[in-house]
Length: 341
Image (cartoon, rainbow, N blue to C red; front, side, top):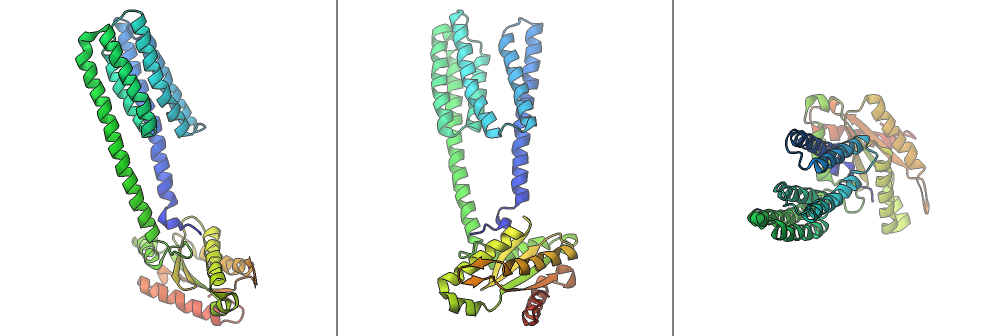
């Protein structure tokens, strides 16, 4: 079945991807700036943590460069970093313990940061599998090397547990929201053809013509299959349904991504063309007629269709627009050989 484009508009998907990209660049940029500032303070002061801070700066710069290049998929990049950070923190705590030094309080903050990033970039079960052992390890190291900071470490562990629980709650909310969106999406579709149903098509048309400047460049194409009753009698009901599905698929595949395809009534389909010129709309209508004639199916050599084309600028309201398209459809159907009006 064809998937109606208006139910999941390409501009919205593009906007979401750009937001994800912006976040993937902003976070490491912020990290690079913060760690560079901390590195400068460390070099000016007691020089503690210079190696760790230098590594954090380099990792942040690498993430910025990788995100800007767009050569590495975001999921791969963030997932790899989310696995590297807990390992880095474990190594740092181990080295400090072997050297006999106390664990600096900043490492408890680092645990919180690692927890946030892991929960943001990994599935919940994977993030929890990393964070819980890491938290237990740092808690044991605190008891062993600097028990005076046990209160601070317990509070850090509490924050990690709280983040995991909040992430679990957020996942449940997101799952329910996705389920509702899928239900809304299904309610917009014609169950036979997968095109938009009549109500969803009407809503799309209202949205496309809401702004006067946009409405002036909106066109509609009303098309139906000639003598569909005969096709139904010839091929029987199930095969005739397949003709409708194939025709709907053809309409979706041959039009631009911003064109909405609606099953309007029986074998009638309504196409909504936003921001289109007169010439381009005529070209789409003409291609529908020509392409449908070459649609080969079992026991059917081509699908003859008629097309009525109307522009919102020609009418005062949407009812008049649909009426005009329907009048032209009837004229095309009655014309001798010419199937476009």
